[in-house]
Image (cartoon, rainbow, N blue to C red):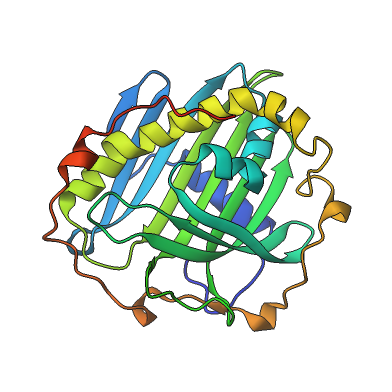
Length: 270
């Protein structure tokens, strides 16, 4: 799927391919394994810090359905995802595909990044997949205050293991656009990724109570008739090729003291 020349909505074969890659073990180096969370990386081009990252978390006391809702619920994400700067849906393509914007904070002193992605999702029996890749939208060109990154392929595989038990696999190949220092890749795989997974777990625990107080019946990812987003034509979109974006050389930047000190996982969701 990562080699597409034109924008297409993923089909069953793409979802199967993504699931297979989530399960594959060849070529991956484990960088973290602790308390039910494991992280692997696969270096592709070391000089560009281009790599794939895979995280897996065993989620006890959380149903696959709850985790799926949390990953979809954009209003809730603004509450629990402390890395998010701005996120919004741009428009819908089909009942299970849309286009959206997401910007996030990078470790200081790096510039913050943003992406425009085509996202699609599919329940598959007891499992669920949500995945995306970068596209260009004429109304949302790269911004001066952000570096436009490229999601070559990013997604989540949720595997239901019973009424209150599931496994989450996160798989990402993102071109951050620029030469990053090695400490960023190391920090991502050994600290930031596990921290993000723990944060997501806590968000899932708190979600049912939060959702009861915030539009409890509004779940357009389950009920497409609730989706009031404007339609987007495939012809309005183009593939966002990494080589068409400006490269930022941040390879010489050192990690800031403040950032090294950060380490709290106690992020509250109200």
